[in-house]
Length: 95
Image 1: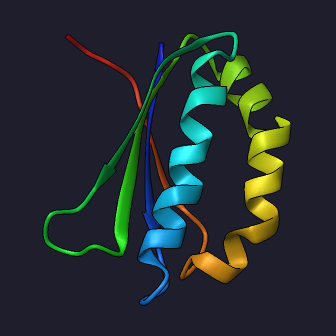
Image 2 (image 1 turned 90 degrees about the vertical axis):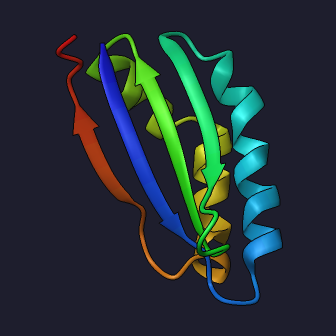
């Protein structure tokens, strides 16, 4: 299993648009082969900061996710909503 934590920062003033776009990624991702969890969070301290907590069966499943149509479509609008690219952490569960 591969865990990914993605930190995403919205542009100031674009928080609600970014939240809606990010929420739109959840349903199609959850039905992807190899997706175990795909949970969106928003920071309680800074409304511009979002996190995805993701669990995948394998790196190969994550790689397929990254080129799916809904993620590619989000990438096309991300520049107008986000302060920069997502900061990704890749983790292996130890216990």
